[in-house]
Length: 72
Image 1 (tube, rainbow, N blue to C red):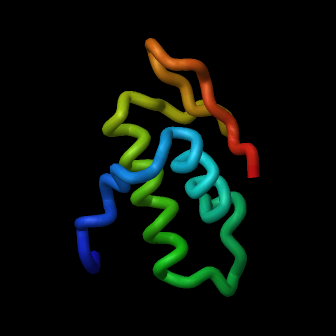
Image 2 (image 1 turned 135 degrees about the vertical axis):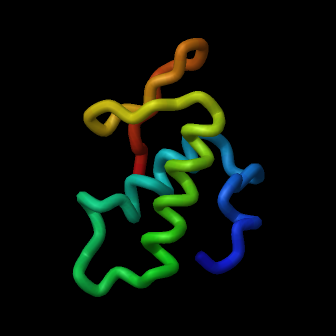
């Protein structure tokens, strides 16, 4: 994988990460999706998981924060 510095995406809010993931997630990826777009979706999911979120049927759930769904 290229750089790993963007994996944590600390500058993004939780909601921004959910939106970023949803925009580029496997269900939304088009055949012409770039490697970079797929990498960003993976990085967003990883960052959310590091923050304690788990994805269930399109909703990101946390034990102490409200559940999040994409707004984009």
